[in-house]
Length: 548
Image (cartoon, rainbow, N blue to C red; front, side):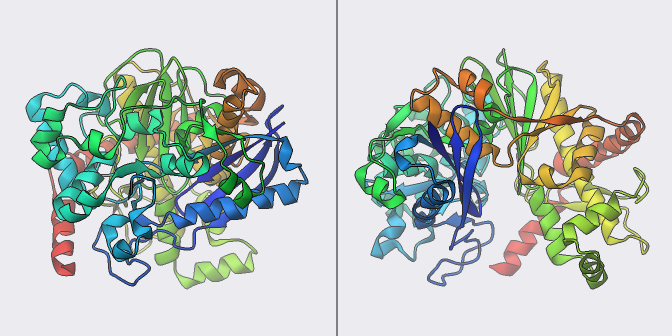
């Protein structure tokens, strides 16, 4: 009995073939998206403004065509032994389609229209619309807003759809369905349109199964009053349920028999929790890659400033699922390595037979806490939690003529750990316990220094996921539930979930030193993030003027 989990990331899609009896990962395959992240231009060459981030839906279909046959070939598993397929996705990554699910960007008339493509999770060009959504909700006293930490992000669903309405009402009028890419992929697999409760709850302002009122949408824009009934759906599918069965056409594309159970779509970070056995309250799962998403389940409903959202059953049935996050983690380290490391370090890394990231990690690990004299704000891609402000930017304080590349590399890692501690303290201030951390994703898997710094800064033990592909494993676990191999996700997690045996414990001396540094981080956090000094926003405004 096997299931397949597909993890649709920012730059690539990955399929993992899993033995449903014990969670053993039999084979995996990766497909790099040919179009990647379109943040500078469309395939036609049309230039994009600042803060745009788009994707092409053909890349997702091609992921199915390339990865699923590959894992079957590698494993030698008979396709008839596959009982279910599950997927997870970045979010919010919504797209406009026709009534039968054809993406507008597939149509000849819209190939050169930016608003016809998928707006990726890190599309930040809808900040003006997010500000309007928040200001209108506050003015009306909307009860759902505190469930999102008091602020809806420009990354979320309605910010992006309102942007289309206000900037290109002609394109908005052509949209029959505006749908998360996760749900669109399931639609392609089954021929049945579904909307998963997870993405709807966290990204589309659905609380207790209900959207905001028509009056609220009318207050945003009269043409937006009936947006839900005109462009969406009010029916939601529960996590672990069967969305439908694999269609003959998609079965032929992937080399599978038709009729296989297809699970309801899920979000990449949320689906990871059962994959690392985090099915109880008090365990924070950090899905760390280009960004970091923090997932935490609790027994009670609390309102936490700056959280991304809380949804009953949004992660684990019966528990309140809380989400927070950092908009850039691995992306920050990659930026530094790609743009700011002197040639001497490239040469030294090659001489040592190491990659540049590994070399900088090794050199940075030789330092004592505080020895580099640096402090950074980890806002290279804005701040998702707890400030919810994409117009904030990164900062490095304390550089001198003696500062070297490993110093900066370590300071950037520390800054991301401080950002996670800020999130933890926001939860605990409201009485939501965070007992331990579980890290998943390629970043903590590869970087031992990062693991130790996160444990030292937060003062909590850190356990690693037992799978290098935890989101895909989680998707495969939900496929096992949808395929009736397990009665629920708790049972699937018991047999299929994985944790590594070792636990990273905080170093008591380092923890005390980091307490002092974190206090300085908090001062900078408040000064530049809460309005005392808006220089970051003024600089960004000047940048936009210069590029206009």
